[in-house]
Figure 1 (cartoon, rainbow, N blue to C red):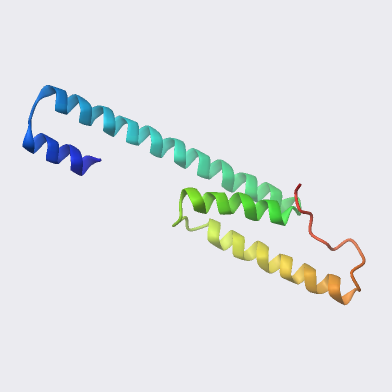
Figure 2: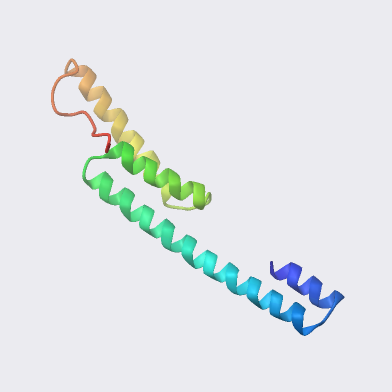
Length: 108
């Protein structure tokens, strides 16, 4: 957005162009702030679900983080950790013949 505004200013330096660029920049800042708030809330939701043993639901929350912010440094690691725990629980359940209270809750 900033590059487009700079280009527009070079091509036609009018008050209207300046107003349009300022409005666009303000909108981008609002969107970024909103996105960051959503990502933070989803990370916290995933953490809460994980602590409650709702591993699949936690993974879903963290996947949503990655859909909003693909390069997020924490979400991918959290998903890997939860998947690792799910795998361990599945192996324990198989050893016990599929009985017992070791199955992870789905969160649904």
